[in-house]
Length: 435
Image (tube, rainbow, N blue to C red; front, top):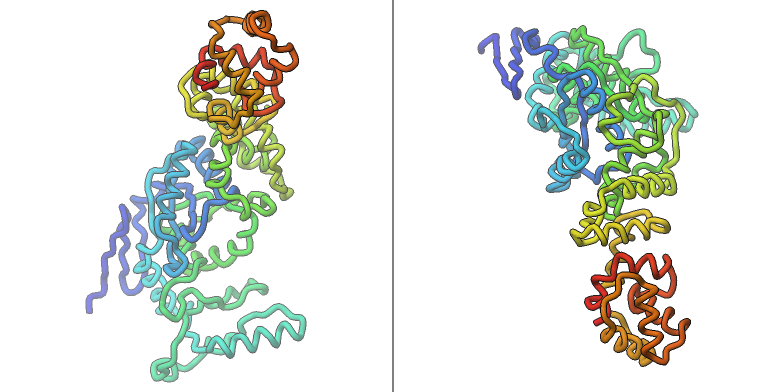
């Protein structure tokens, strides 16, 4: 058997010589920050915030930003979800230099686990799930925190070699870490655990800063212990974001479907973790003043009212013609009309429903049909008051009766913005609206 094996992963060459993995220094410094989404579910607002903050920091430091898809759980992976996540990143203008699929790194996870075994820093564990569950229950009954008791740590070599039972690989606990046990790094099917895979992958990509939700803080000591056991000397800086309470209930796809702009969502998410110099801003502004080391410490609850307000402000800032495209037109006048409705609405979905009601066919009774017939025979007028005056003079309609009927015929509703203001932007569409 050869003493040296050469493996290649993306642009990194890894050499396993006498069971020791070496990372060539020539590649160190290539990557600095990463975002590691899971294709097992929709991207939540907390996930997007992590991606945003990593990307912004990478931009500020002029470093590469990579996306690592954590697709190790083949049974839970949802087909096409990885592409959906990448499409969402593109929609939010989050650019990355490389995509890595974690499952493609299994050979390197295995190689490094073998290195730890060879150096007696890891061991085979034959404890069954039932036995371990019993131990966990004993600890629970005694109101103690469960820790693996190292039952298999010092098994003689002959017992290990002759044992045909399924086994996991556990890394030996750090002597100085009282709250850490000898935890599993390879499962019985020899796939890596998430902590082991992440720790190794961060080594392979030479990650310098990990920005993540504080709920993953408990995993950091284990990942640091893994890298230390592999003699990886570089220290990774961890920055934890305060959690957004109930973030797993709010998916980015749903927010977009509800009519929230990517710019507004980004604006809101940045505001949940840092005090911005102003309430409304875009990504370019953010990169100029954002400071990852000034993150707020307290968790926040997702606030739909604040997001709606921010979205409303971003919609107001759009060019009229651009806003009109969100409601199915390419007309500045329709965009201006949409901004009239922004006095009461806050999303493109709401605006589209309101504008659609104007142009959709309406159910008309005899009263409305009478007014509609008169309007069809009325010439074009620039101003609403002249339009109304002409109709009132040339018909027997009362002012109140006409105004109420005309409002419904135009908007499909009985109340809303002033009719004169609506007419200003729809006067060229009257014949199309009142069919």
